[in-house]
Image (tube, rainbow, N blue to C red; front, side, top):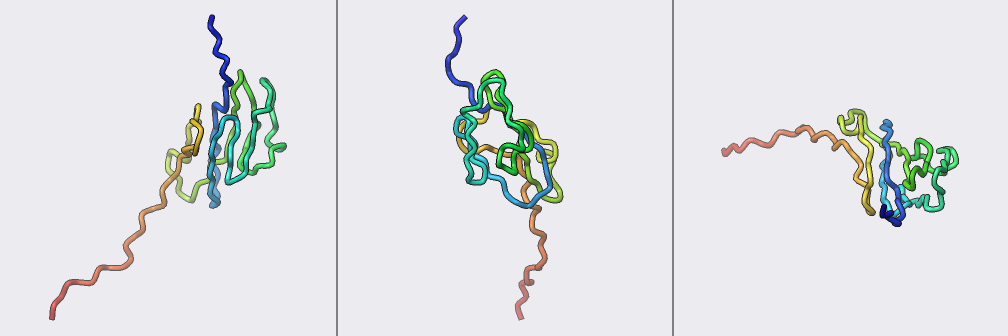
Length: 124
């Protein structure tokens, strides 16, 4: 058997929807996540180890951070407004996200209701 010696990195991000107004911006670089401008590097987490969420100084991490079979897995809070879309209310895990901004499901704000009528084109 040929064994791939590449390091397996952050592999799975579970999402836990939560009603809150503050924004979430996540970028991945290998085993590190930058969450709203703060870097959380899990590259030193050994295989089989778990860090309880309470020991990670980040309000967005909602569960333990684990390295299983070489890959890091964690759960992030997914903020949403008062009427989340189905994709936000019942998010699927993000599996093997590429380095760069992490595409989180979101619900676009409701279309602005037309409150002003356009003036009638009346000559006279």
